[in-house]
Length: 188
Image 1 (spheres, rainbow, N blue to C red):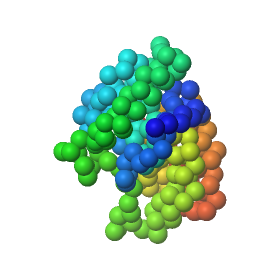
Image 2: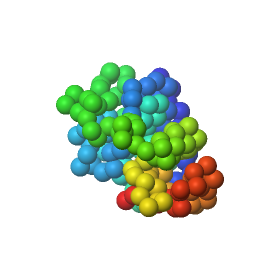
Image 3: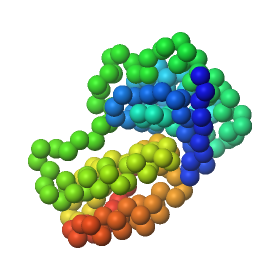
């Protein structure tokens, strides 16, 4: 098994591509060790000193490190943990949490109005694929009084360039296509 790694725009995160599916659908943001019970893989990664967060998506795992650790020291331990997990056919998700609400699969609500449907479509078609390339995800939370609220996960959460991405990229794009959008804000 060969696991590829990619640096992300966030120096505190690294993207690991195991060459096989991680999750069959949705994403799981294990932002701290208190949520690790949702995934045996996340639990194993959190046993590595210096791992601060784990984000699971369809084709990749993004790991966030603490500021006091360096990638040259962490990367081999993470690769070994991923390799052992996959070669031993351990589950990615805890059985009790398959289909859990912790697994985020953005889906339109039946009561979405036209503006919200347009926002979701632009995010799904133009923004989320680009963000996934950088080891993260972005999900729609709400649209109120001209303000779009989004949740950043994986390498996007805490990334130094995330504010610029939100304002210069996503906000400008949404305002261009949807005149009702005045601003984009990140949910914390």
